[in-house]
Length: 111
Length: 116
Image (cartoon, each protein chain N blue to C red):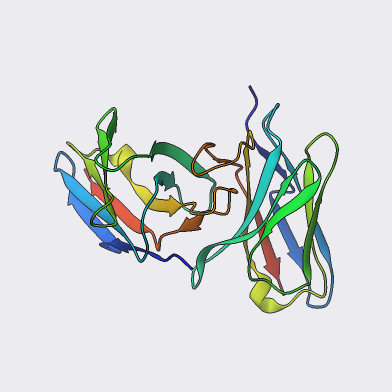
């Protein structure tokens, strides 16, 4: 079965700083989801990457997919307190909505 | 469009009891997936339903079951509750197309189950 490992596990940054979260897969990545979760709440969809080399941006968040490295990265520019939460990557190798999620990265942004 | 709704939001049960959780997907979505989230195991897939049929199942014991109705609403049931079943249960809906990453899953707020 596919496993996704995220690094770092937790991150504390000062407001305004840039940061990167990585998601590495144990198997070939055919595509990847990124979600954000506030503690104890549901997941908020951020973006989906479907092709190797694909890069997507939404506001100050950019995600890239490197199929060869079986890795995806999520980059936040000029972080704000509203970016705080848990970031989760997910992959669905079977195509039947059976998504495997990463271990999660907890982000704190200090004003 | 209304998002995914889950009821109840919070539930407290005792060991040995059973519980039923409900999920209403986004209008027009035919696929509903259920996940269990715990601090120790993270987010784990339980099962997925599409057009009232279970299409996929995770590695959970038979105490965990689910069903989907003709209006795509779904319920999951946990029988003979154990302390380890305390978790946040999340459901997600998607249109239900086949193939890799054709559909994005949209999650509900979750049901927090506490087993005493």
